[in-house]
Image 1 (cartoon, rainbow, N blue to C red):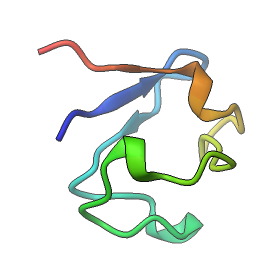
Image 2 (cartoon, rainbow, N blue to C red; image 1 turned 90 degrees about the vertical axis):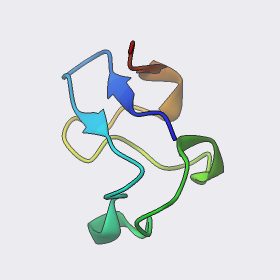
Image 3 (tube, rainbow, N blue to C red; image 1 turned 30 degrees about the vertical axis):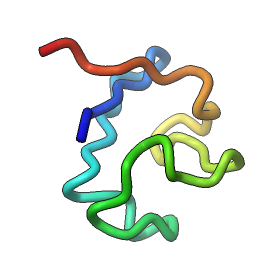
Image 4 (spheres, rainbow, N blue to C red; image 1 turned 180 degrees about the vertical axis):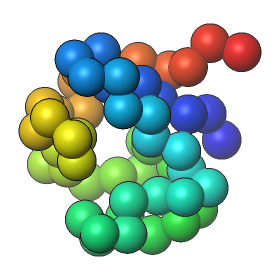
Length: 54
């Protein structure tokens, strides 16, 4: 599963870790996160994330 980076603040969503504090279990692909999820650091939506380059 790909990691995704917040273009606003640089937060990296790692699907192996998830975002348990905000209801996203480890192992959850970015595509499977609810559309209303926001970056835990700066609060922007999923639209402001891009896939991490390999």
